[in-house]
Image 1 (cartoon, helix red, strand yellow):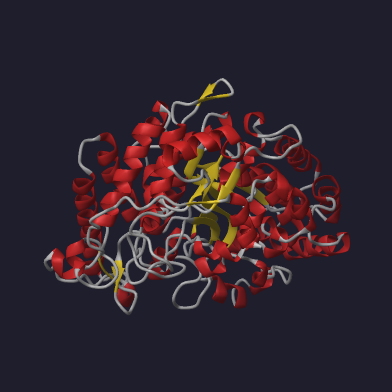
Image 2 (cartoon, rainbow, N blue to C red):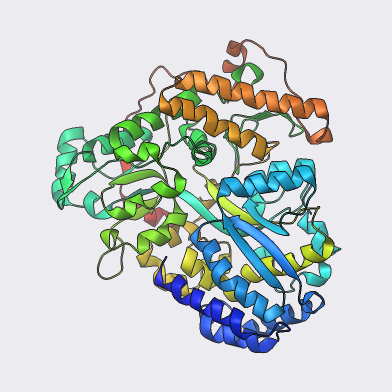
Length: 567
């Protein structure tokens, strides 16, 4: 945990212990003085006015205790340990903000959906579930909530236009179902210092015949991975790739989080491919899922999908630390910060915070030895496809939560995303949700310490990174099938083709059950009749036939030229 979070945690505990249960602006003033200061896009007068609104709006709920939950990342640790105690002190609403694994969050959400029991008063769950929430209608759509039942607890300074991720939490019906709380992309990460070492550059050019730089395609990435693996730099044995492969729920995210679209499996389209998305699920003109296997027009077991999984396994086995194959998402994320990784194709930027805190990959002046850039794309990728994934953890209010508890939770959700606190929260967790925060003077001053993260979020390119879209009709049921089946390919129990054949068949089985039940009404699956795979492979778009040559001509680009193109 970094120093910022340690000191802030102490403040949170102090506020919780010293403030009376009935609370008033005194607690807010102490919070602003000790925690926020001028690290905000609002003036002090505007901060106090926003806090006064929370004090007033919370009056009917003083003394109430509510429970909310999110996954365990630095941003949510800050909310749980600092912002929740501060909110409780300011409003008199006692908030318990639980931190659990992302898979556990989805499991709790699914249990609440199925049982109707109010387990949590609000969830921070990924916008990847937007298709689920829209079809089942078991969460409050926030558009109607803010205009109706929740109008009296909706902040006049919420400023929805300032949020950068609302397109990901808005369903095809035009309604907002979730409020973004944190966002992070998966980007390419590399050791800028090593890539710019003249001796290393010369050695690479002599070996491969082209310049070492940011790889544009997977062919170049593979050359660079091979080149660095086994080299000794500054007395450390280096690896050319970092990933993870343990049969665990997080292994599924590794693939549903745009790996397949980066390979080129799906169709052109932003924020997601249509009619075939990055899960390989095809929908019809009414956004109803019709198949996942090639025989029904899907792409989950298509040649491009097999290529994607084969490449990941090859790089994990040949160019990564031996321990990586047994790691999960959370275990693998901090490894590049140890100083022995040359590049990583799929770096979730939530791990930038621990990277910044690592002396092994930071210079003495506080600038990084590494940089972030767009991830390279595979042989099946084409212009107009999404380039990568963006996680949008978002506040979600279930219909099963009683109105008064939902109102109190909505106040907390707005507080932790408010303009008063957002710059400071982003300073700790580096998971940007507001345009004003990204463009603030504070992050202009910090930009050179964050390796291209600020430049990325200020660039128009960021819209090419997106979460799972609305093709997925039931995220909790379908997501668990990915790690179970791809885990068989990672372990060698099955070939990639065999694992993906089983995966798409399992997904279609779930969608067929949903169709038979009628529980999603006109929004649910209407499965295509199977046809010979050749029929679909001959059509335009996904699923795509196997390329005769899947190894493209390697291509790299200068990092500094790339950054200039973002300006």
